[in-house]
Length: 307
Image (cartoon, rainbow, N blue to C red; front, side, top):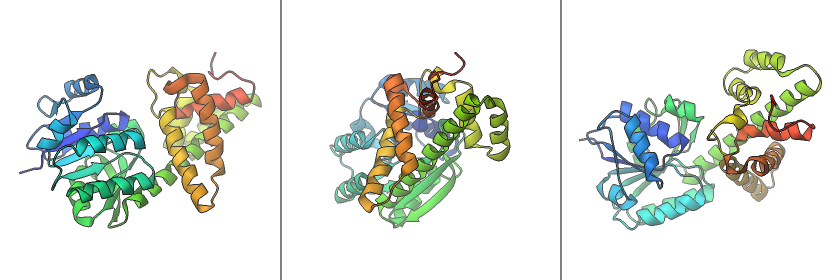
């Protein structure tokens, strides 16, 4: 009989991962889902095939019934608060899978809490945009005891992910170190695109020719972010794809790791400076692609293009 599953946290990535688990994983029971804002759980459940999910009213309700519990949460503080709530229930013998992006020290701390309580724990931070999550194309980084990682694998490659980076038996924090460093590549990409597109505009070249070059030379994420910038998607969306607060949290973790080891992340420092401008201009609804708007303002242009 397949394990009973429970998912906590339905942000942009979580919703796509839940969708793919219900469509592709072997389930004997509906996937239980919980979000602090219950309406988000209801809305997702109504979009998925009938009978594939069930909305639960509390974390304790889901944990008490589940064999495997996933969570994908916004930041370290929320993860630690959720873990405290989870531990009000008996967790002995259950497997907990954390897909959140947190500081490596937080991951190691949470792992010890769960294993000391008699549970199994695996971290699986994931790389990819929300659209990638919807398509089941994430890159999953898996760390923890090999036996526990093996129990988690049926829900990643071929289900929610296209690739697994297997770090079995490595400390939990190593997977988060990879995730945090990997995200600095995203910041560098967005920063370079923003600077290049603004320079193309201020020199009179215009963004169209540069965008064509980007699509030819760097198809994939570079082209996608360039499209988001020149189309104005970075400020027109009702809800950000990669919210500024989450981006600054990830940048902060990377900068903290660098400081602790004597390294420097110059591009991340610049990106975080621009993200601060995004937050000042847009508030919490700012998006990481809004770095383009911040760079535009430095050049004497408006934050919003096309206006």
